[in-house]
Image (cartoon, rainbow, N blue to C red; front, side, top):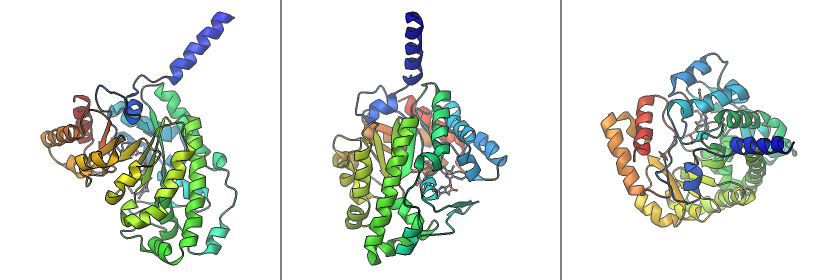
Length: 355
Ligand code: CP3
């Protein structure tokens, strides 16, 4: 009896302990043999195996909402590219969907929301109580399935959009170069903007906590449209909500990736996060000085992967040297573009692994 108990305890431990924990050690600022590497949008159209799964389906949303398939494509880059982390296959837009604003993903054009938030009445129409565990159960199931299939090979990253970026979609209703409808609300109805941001923040906190419970080892928050705000506005409409999220989930390391937030790097480094994501416009040495003791993630230009293999290798090495060996998680400065040759992505990854 006691022997049996013992072996159960060991197998449980084996299932939860990681064979490759470079990502988590680097995130916490611990010593690593080499920087860990993964790629934003690593699961996606760059991989023929992803396109094969996608072709059999009615669309992107079917893939996101079918846990077995989401888990399958999450694992593809681990198997094919050899990355040091998996990121759960989903989308930041599942949060507005759970809040009562469904989205469509229009082929080659991107997301579209038939209903948007323009007035207090629109906000009041959203359900007050959101059962996140139920509405987003497909994500938590996908995480649990992925963790099981990974069997500790690499950590699993969970994620959500930053409240400001989700707000931008819920007001604008679609992608935009300027997000002027969303920004207009900041100037004309700031109280409504804050009420919506608060609602998004609370939903996101519940969502991320449940991702951790399901098995996510690290969380990344994507503030993809941070670059649209002045520093002053970023301090009012984004940073306080990011801080609430960071403080609400102390259990795992957190990465804040605010694309285009060149002026806000120091403020972001002061949040209760462990990792600051950089895009390719953010100079490495300068960012290091601004970020203090925090680990940095990034930041090769995704377009650099259109260059020759020799050039990719050279640019990747140069980036690694500039970051130094410690407190760095190698990545691109934004998601990989779908027409990138996957072999070039592999070249980027292999160069980091050989560093
Ligand atoms: O591998 C990974 O990084 C995990 C998967 C992931 C997706 N979206 C899958 C996806 C992640 C982390 C996201 C986050 C996301 N989604 C962001 C933040 C990151 C960023 O890029 O700034 C944003 C802004 C979105 C919203 C979104 N989803 C847009 C604008 C689009 C259309 C653009 C496009 O590439 O077509 C999507 C669709 C989407 N999300 C795809 C994938 C793989 C492509 C859809 C397809 O396969 O047909």
